[in-house]
Length: 141
View 1 (tube, rainbow, N blue to C red):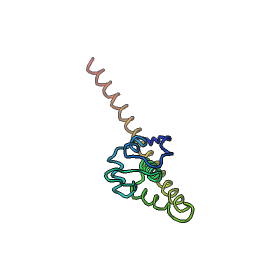
View 2: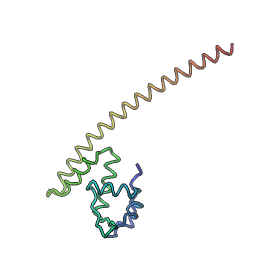
View 3: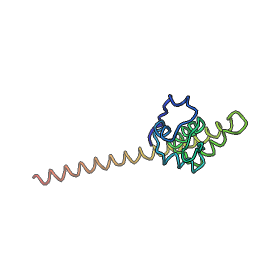
View 4: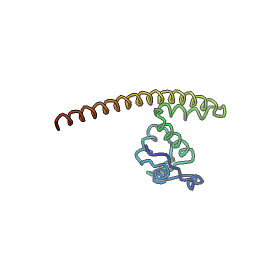
């Protein structure tokens, strides 16, 4: 996934076109339409034209960050929807924190499994290298 690139010059604009959003965040129009179809973004429609507000930009930034961290779209939707709780985002922050801790534990478990697999593969390569060297030595004699 492309890292989120936000053009700060656009942050003062009231709305952005789909092309400006794509350029600012490194996504495709298809991605924006997909998130719109999943009701994660809510651009203003003027005929066929979509205009994205500051709210859409903030939501897209959070969507992309959530995807980068491995959250599902449903988890991201639930977190975004909690923004409107009337508790100064306490509920949203608490749930985000809980999910992030769970995700971090899962990522660390996956990393440990990957580290083990890498070490085992290195051992197999070392063994294979020694076997080939031994075979080459025998064949040369």
